[in-house]
Image 1 (cartoon, rainbow, N blue to C red):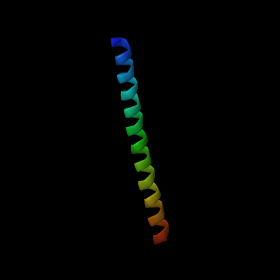
Image 2: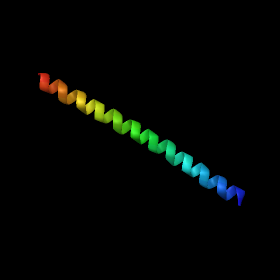
Image 3: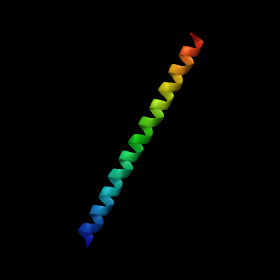
Image 4: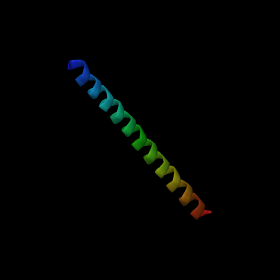
Length: 43
């Protein structure tokens, strides 16, 4: 029972880390796209 519980917690923590990484990547892409848009507007 303990191993199964640990497995669930471990999988959840991995999903949480991947979710945070995806969130950071999405935020970075949004900022990059915004900078590109503003740069082209200035030109």
